[in-house]
Length: 216
Image (cartoon, rainbow, N blue to C red; front, side, top):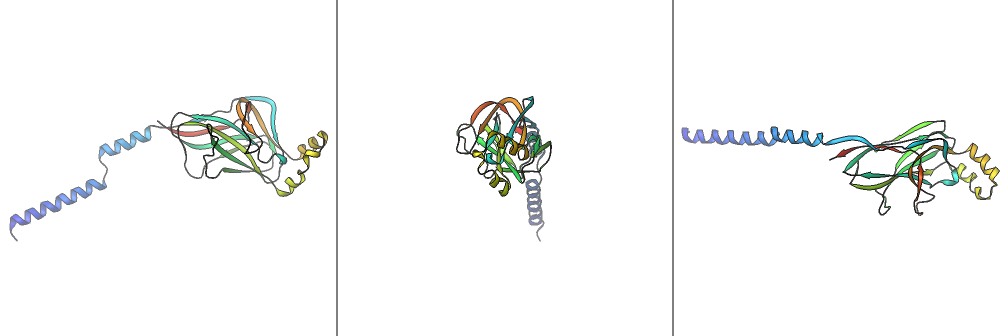
């Protein structure tokens, strides 16, 4: 083969190999950009509990399934929510289930395709931490994060079907045997009895704490 042609073919092969290697291996500039992006993310506490009110509690009973208690969360940047934490002082409701709901404050529309679920065992004081199974990203804006009493055992709900006919004494006695108690905090909160109701603004909440990673 002509030496000139051989040199040309060799040069082309070397150029092709270099191009492929460049496409597969990030340059130092690309690597630096990736580090910079990761460096701008910051994990922080997005929502704090407020001031604990000694001796004060919020009590939920089986006839209050659907009741919601929440707090407002303002995000100045796009944020990934990592965990939502709250305390329960005691629970003696069988098969109690709570769900975390997230609403856009301006329209009160739900953000999540399906709520985050927490099954609450019977027992005394416990800290409940709810962690999304997949990344939960929220854009800049104001939200209401609420804890909803989602459900409990069918037999328990049936016992409370006629609770509206009980005397105050009967209700008190039943509540001592079957209720869920939360600590009360002095901080603006939002409450409603059913999903169709409008949230009522109160200066009380159950002490939600939210952590996440904020991207600036």
